[in-house]
Image (cartoon, rainbow, N blue to C red; front, top):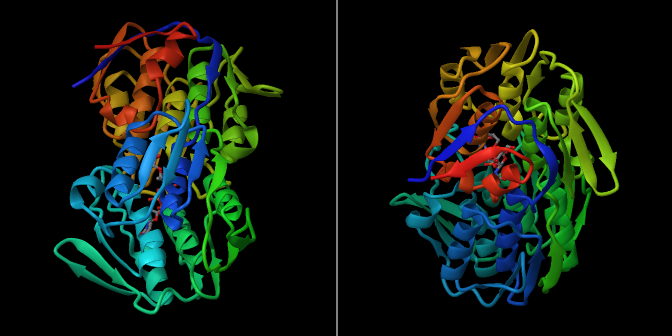
Length: 416
Ligand code: EPZ
């Protein structure tokens, strides 16, 4: 199993190219099931999760082929409506094929995703939404069996709380349903707007983009399109923390500040200098870091996918910060590992109190999930001495070319 070794204490200086967003690419690839025609996605990152989604689509009958560098072409008829356990257990986002399969084939059998390291993460909102649209859902042998013999019908669906995945799944399905679907309290993440842009290019009729009320008028068929995936805002925020924690200055080429929401304000409050430039965002730190509170919330609030990385930054800030996680119930697994490196963090329920320390010290640590893994890499970049991060396969699910990007800016880092 691969590990990453980091020698800390080298300020990052240079340019990091921001890749296409993983969490936009996953629903966009699922949109390939909505038409037999060719959907070409540009700016696709080379990530393990996207390879998993490609494998899932392939076994549904869709040809997924690289068109040119960073471009994927999807096309072909659906030949199989079952998403098997072996693929779904690797990646929860596999559930996003359920909406398109139901809309196109009126039947789908998708393995029920289990819990995951960051929480129980049920899919009840997805299923209730499809039921409201006329589907019959049952559970059979660990599989969701969904049927809509008369096709999906438009409905008004009010989410009791914001879910990115449920909003995406229902948008995908509603695009081909009969009549109008209204999604109330929908997620407003930039990845949702990106999905709407692609669906619209495919011929869908969706109003309300960027708001929490989306109105979808179903159409009879969708056609092929070409769509460029937006830059990854979580990768952007993560490398912003890397520049900041090492006291360096890095141009995040291709990044968009507007997609960072409250993360941008929190970084600025902590003393990180962020400048928007023609090519992207420059992130630098010239002075000390100040303890800054953060509470995770749906977009435009502070992203839960940035919580672990921001906590590492606060671990070496002057003063204390309180970091509250409201989206997932078990997303503090990085805390004991950071404490092994000398951080002073206590967890009380959904909040972590971080008392800044002057420096961290290198240690062997264990990655537990994707974002937590990078929080340990950040700690290693700032720490005195050597850090070895174990179980880096978590990192490869969602960060492209980590060592190359960091080493290109002067980090001393290797995989072994
Ligand atoms: C997406 O997951 C992201 N994944 C996650 O990123 C991200 O952390 C999350 O949104 C929140 O921003 C992808 O986009 C592929 P949710 P998703 O439905 O859609 C509960 C990363 O590191 N819930 O918005 O699964 C759920 O348990 C990953 O890249 C239900 O109870 O998240 C959670 O507590 C990790 N029932 C909350 O809602 C449901 O039916 C928000 O989940 C659906 C969700």
